[in-house]
Image (cartoon, rainbow, N blue to C red; front, side, top):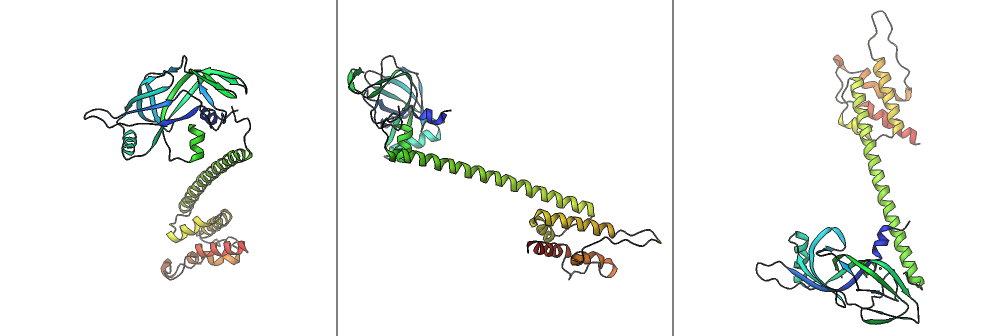
Length: 319
């Protein structure tokens, strides 16, 4: 399936510089320019160096027609009010009063050399072979050349001559070059490969960010659930340690905490308290609860053993 963006770019053509005369007091800022001089348009990225001619006989141009910035439909900057198609396409109109339009007007006043461009939609395309001659718009053209007939102008635009050269030629200057040089082909393929690579990297980064966000929220919910289950409140240090654990370490730690909490429940009178089977290597993990200090109060000088025990397990697991 053809790339719709590339298909659209085939029919965008560069034009001459646009003029933005000074406005009379109380009047809108106007523009004027020659969108097409009636002759051969050559050097287009798609139609090649043999050139294209637009047949002005019966050409359709909406009145009024939109004036856009860089062919973006969402960037409306003016309205083409008058069009002259007598051997060429001259246009004139008014700028809008929105911020983008006024920015372009100001840049033009400051001397920035904007160009005019247009999108043309041909009803038919005629290929004139080498050695043959065709007359269009009152002029004779020798083949090879491409003729656009039964045309319709869909939009005019203002574009910046300061844009990247390759992008400008491709976007603004619509039969593939019959003899493209290897250099041209290599550049095009390199650009496509680079764009595909950048798009893949963006999608990867977005997916990783979404995954990390999900995992962080899941761990926060698990820690909160563990606090509620054990009827305790972890310190900020513990929560940070639990958050930074990998999944296996956190699962082990939560299991040991649950076992210790269940084993710490006082048995009925006359029954011996059952101590859960805790790995001796991590017995110190629970010392702060098993030996809570005088009167059941924790010793403030002791380091919280949940964190230290989990860290010990993590370090042993990593060896």
